[in-house]
Amino acid sequence: MLNRRLAREATLRSIYAVVVGKNTTQEVTKHIIKEKLKDDTESVKFAERLLLITIDNGTDFDDIIGKHINNWDVNRLATIDKLILRMAISELLHFEEIPTKVTINEAIEIAKMYSTRKSGKFVNGILDAILTDLNSQDKINKKGRGLIESSKNQ
Image (cartoon, rainbow, N blue to C red):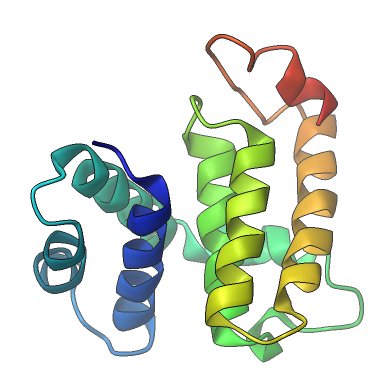
């Protein structure tokens, strides 16, 4: 059974282990994602895909983030906040079946659990600005029942 919240949490831990701990994606998939998600193959696939897209596009996602943090450098952001933002951008751009509101709400909740007291509000503000910008560039492509029209208006 697909449990995306647990998969996102395992993915965040994995991304942190790759970026900060210099582990390989193969190591973290085996020791973090598969251990946390056990026999839930759908969640493992989701987490692996989210991990790889986020890692592969980290620099590009940092450029997107940088456009929306006024007078601040991306490298000065709290590491967890930056990784949560990267993960959310991955979902916004590459997971057509996930509504944008769900992605943003999940990122906010994970930020509240794994980062500072103010991180939820910070992540919300940045992701709202990023979503508005990506929508204006027609880069949000959501497909499926209830997603086509709503992704343009969120």
